Amino acid sequence: MANYYSAMTGTDRSFRTTALIIASAMFMEQLDSTILATALPTMARSFKVAPLYMSAGLTAYLLGLALFIPASGYFADRFGARRIFRLAIAVFTVGSILCGQSRSLPFLVAARLLQGIGGAMMVPVGRLVLLRTVAQEDLVSAMSWLMVPALLGPVVGPPLGGFLVTYLSWRWIFYINVPIGILGLYLATKYIDDIKEPDPGQFDLRGFLLSSISLSGLMYGLEMTSRGGGLGRVTAGIMALGLVAGVAYVRHARRAPNPIIDFRLMRIPTFGISVIGGSLTRITGGALPFLLPMMMQLGFGFSAARSGLITFSTAAGSVLMKVVTGPILRRFGFRTTLVWNGLIATGFLAICASFRPSWPMLCINLVLLAGGFFQSLQFTAYNTVAYAEIPQLRMSSATSFYATFQQLMLSMGICVSSALLALSMSISGHGSPRLSDFTVAFIGVTLISFLASPVCAQLPRDAGAAMSGHRREAPLGED
Image (cartoon, rainbow, N blue to C red; front, side, top):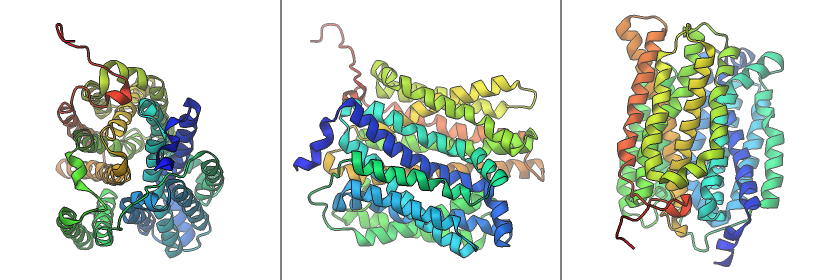
């Protein structure tokens, strides 16, 4: 077991180095998942297919995520976290090269599937490396560094994609991953320790198959409905298959000694509350990058480039967050921060419902800056306190579980906001989205996220105290 804990005594520099290496890989994955949308019309012309069919490239990536996110933790335990993390970067980079070389839609779909498999292992295994190599008192700072690329990727992706497609070629939206991937492989080899579980147990093959069918079916259905495909017979049938497989998996997990997605982890208060509260909050987190650029283009009449640049205010807020996260959590603790900061963050995002072309751009940017700051603080707190009570031997299972629900809820945010937009258009009789329809969608998703604060109020007062450094003052007369 010596190598299992060997990295837990690293210096301040080492945990920041580890966090930034993993953050760079996550930025590459997050950037790629959003940058493609702006290039789809151009790619459709290149492949000589209708733009509608290009959604297959997006769906293939989600399928790769669904297939391998649950298994990533076991693979890290069995073969070593550094080895799997490097393999994930390599697979993602090779997939990017193949995407850039695509000459037909089927070839692109296969390459995107390969990319998704790499991305599925890269994010949860990277987080697992951080959890196992950083001392608890340094974890808040490390997680705040890790959260920046997760929030920057969806913001930077659309404007960068528009620039590359306009001035270079759509193929460069994939080629830019190559130097990042090569650098990531070198840095991971040099700086990240190869930590593995000495006895990972038997692989849950039946659970892997059931969870893969369930997650791929649900993610495919959410992706299709969020892009205006509606709930047609094929989509409804695939989602129904996903639900049936999900029910079968839950029954299997109750009996399996080592299920690939372990629902028993939800009995741990800090983990269970973080999953539920974080899921409600991520409804809005997934909806914002979908709704805001569309509202700026269709409602305000802005160009794609201008609407993309406006979202940089959210990114700036998330960068500012990492400087103050530690002091805030030390002063108030996780419970108070998650309850009240959640209300503030959601409140600022709810203000987006009232955006109108008559608003000064300075005011819009300030609202987005504040919203990005508080939302980033909220996600950092969720992602840290979730592991406060997780035993080291169950850490890999917990990271896979958390990453699975994180991806599902971000996809759900797009689906819910799209459904609310369509409902408002139907009631109002609008043929295309108008500002009033975006108002309805923003209000709807933020009302869901407001429910997270009562959930977080169930956390113990001293939850994650070893991580945050927060100590509750003792009442008078108490030693």
